[in-house]
Image 1 (cartoon, rainbow, N blue to C red):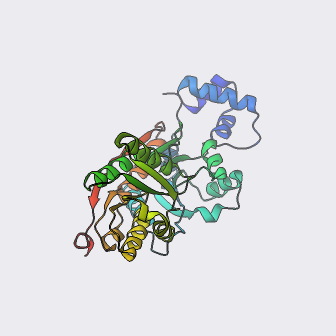
Image 2 (image 1 turned 90 degrees about the vertical axis):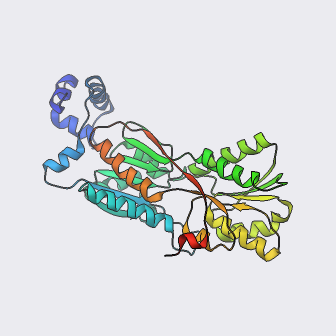
Image 3 (image 1 turned 120 degrees about the vertical axis):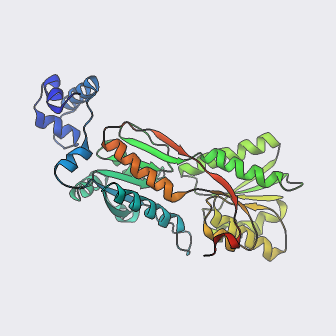
Length: 330
């Protein structure tokens, strides 16, 4: 197995220069970076940042970066499950965890974010719910300054892994089950989420594929993952639909409550499997994601990367459920 000394000799530079390139220090010329990176590739050298942390008698430290949901006044159950899963798994692996939020980094440029995280001895990073608009975080990821796992995003390179479910297939499955279990479902109202999010790209593909296969009429409206917005859209467009398919449970609850107030029955389905679905007043199909396990897998994947593994795309299973009040009460 090649060492940092081998890389320095192969590239014709000092060991300290290799270290600077590996740790993305400023002041290194592009020519030198290219020589070092070429040597790393040719020798298949993999820096073991986890081992370095342990050899210095420090626990490997990871940061959980969450994008809190501001579209609902309800406690965000999903984020709580993410935190629980990551913290429990990190404890098992003797890894230290800190929690950060997108809002804390909003005004920072990528180099500032990198320095901020390095100042807190961060070795790995788990990012939940990054969108295309989060340009500075994308720059942090592309810098490969940290071993990174993105949850619900398709970003993969040698230092970055992705962990999520098959969004397209999950949306296809829950919508199809709902439609086929009810008669005369020809006109579909689909309430989507934020268009700049990666998960919506897959979910939209799923509903479009289903409607094309079953020759169904599809109307798409942006509900912004908001219960209130979904309620408003249902009042406006729900009468003309045969079924309402929602890209989140919060929107499904808003749509169902609006239908009840209009005294109209249309089947509704959601996405995520949060406990609040059991209180919606009507049973609805939804996609259950095991957010705690997804987050635990993200921690395991960070360790995989820190131990020298290559980035990869991990697809975890989902299931279709129909939540009832009796199923969720303690």
